Image 1 (cartoon, rainbow, N blue to C red):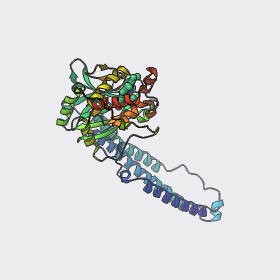
Image 2 (image 1 turned 90 degrees about the horizontal axis):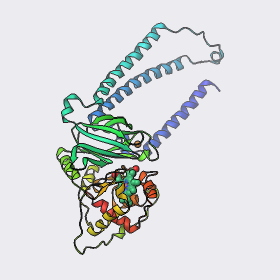
Image 3 (image 1 turned 135 degrees about the vertical axis):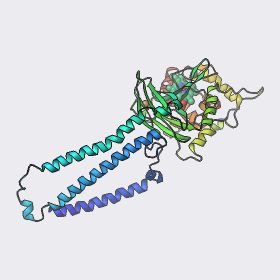
Length: 412
Ligand code: HEC
Ligand SMILES: [Cu+2]
């Protein structure tokens, strides 16, 4: 085939392919795609650390774009200018090879060095800036310890000590004060995990027996998505968490609430556990249990969860509280003030006030909570609670489940 006819047919297919690809993109992606504002976007940032990392990304992109255009341009020029124009030229023996042009070669080396320097300056600045809280902000820093477990996160607040039980401990939802630098000391219990909140800061590995740290800051109150970013076993992909940044006053209120013991709902004399069996249902295996369509902003939804549920049934809750101990849930979970002090699962003292369950996998509502305690292994493959169910031979009747759900939801 003649080279030129090959070229035109390639071009035709190339254009068709491009048009098809563009159509597919347009059809498949919504507005969020073009804004690049997904939950875990590193392009729409919300704090100084992520912003500094984004700047390095952009510098690198621009420099490489310039290189691409220059090299691509020269390649296109050479291809067109020196191509065989006649059949005779095509058959001709290739021209003699030279040794190159020393000036051009030196120039290219110089240009590469220059490009690297242009990238290196903001990169080094970014590395120093993001490494630790800047000196002038140190005094204002809030400290947290985050520990990775297969497949959930524990958060401790060393500055919020609770008499008789140590630092305030929560699970899977990290609540921080907005506008203040937060230094997160990262640890791991079992294997290597990685702490990553894309809109706030880049990832840092959580390594067993080795202290690591990072800092981040949320400029404004907000609700952010976090993710374990180091492959860590079965449920790695769904080892998530949330960061909730609150105004100073809201944060102080939250700390006051969290440092108090679990809520105690006591039945009035004569009150019965008329279980709400309307909430009984069967669950589909692959139900996602998570929505991306919010009626209200996620932060507002989270705030609403801080208050007791409407229509609580105190007698049912009391039943659930007793079941929590008799069904051995208490051997893995702590509910401070209720005689449950297990440490191998997330602290559930205020579980009712969280927006998500099972490390950010499913929403924290009655249905999903029941689905979780009914068969945790079906919701999150391989998780340690499912193994606990087998080892301890935990069997729950639908009535047990409804009572446990009412109890867990009352823990605000
Ligand atoms: C063998 C220990 C163990 C037992 C027993 C156990 N759990 Fe768990 N539980 C866990 C672990 C580990 C997780 C975290 C699982 C994950 O997300 O990977 C968990 C997660 C949870 C969560 C979600 C917590 C969060 O922060 O999202 C709830 C609610 C819960 N368990 C309730 C119960 C109830 C109710 C029982 C008793 C019927 C129970 N658990 C028995 C270990 C246990
Ligand atoms: Cu992990």
